[in-house]
Amino acid sequence: MQTQSPQVHRHPLRTASIALGLFLTLLGIAVIGGLLNPAAPEPATPISPPRIDVLNDSGSATERTVFAGGCFWGVQGVFQHTLGVTSAVSGYAGGTPAAPSYEQVSSGRTGHAESVEITFDPKQISYGRLLQIYFSVAHDPTQLNRQDPDEGTQYRSEIFATSDTQQRIAEAYIAELDKARAFPHPIVTKVEPLQAFYPAESYHQDYATLHPDSLYIAAYDLPKIANLKKLYPEFYREQAVLVGGDHP
Figure 1 (cartoon, helix red, strand yellow):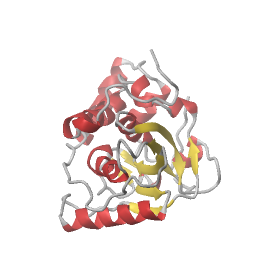
Figure 2 (figure 1 turned 90 degrees about the horizontal axis):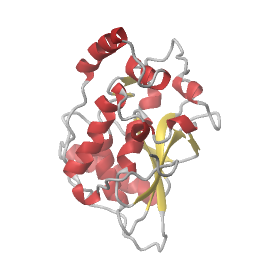
Figure 3 (figure 1 turned 90 degrees about the vertical axis):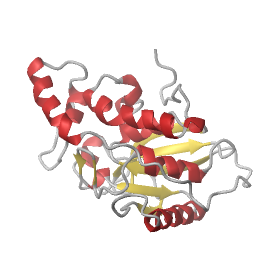
Figure 4 (figure 1 turned 120 degrees about the vertical axis):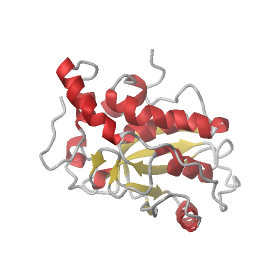
């Protein structure tokens, strides 16, 4: 069972999802369900792809990038259903010490963000298109140090670029979206070079696929995957590419 530090502002639905899974008493359902309604996810915001993108002229079979945007369960789920993504791994980036535990990151004191390392085939999907999905479907880039019910710097919106080109394109796209007022509030997403990425514990991997009946997943993450299918059907794949291979 996962414990919660008193300094961590964590929505009770997420704690229940880890600790109890599907086993909730009627009282628990009533109490937690009451907390669920005020924090219902907002609809996805359709946006145009970036004007500047990466041309597939590197000859590389795969590339990678790291996105942070709130709880990594949902971000991982979205990109596992994105055509051209060959791997999406939940983990931690942007802080110290090396190889932190979930409990350490959840304290908010390590500087890490819950993140997803995305490996993709640039012949099937460009970096710019991944950014488009990240900003419009995977999370709300205008929420500062939080995402829906989860609060703290570990839930910040941040892009960890793996090349100068990725950083330049991401920064230009943010400026482009802000200038066009694509969102009702300014984008707060940070962009910085990736220093290191540390995969999260195994029980965090493929969480949205393995626990679709979790109240947290049903409320906050499955709608993101549905929005991916609705807004970008050309980039949607029905079967997720999973860290743990095929699951029954």
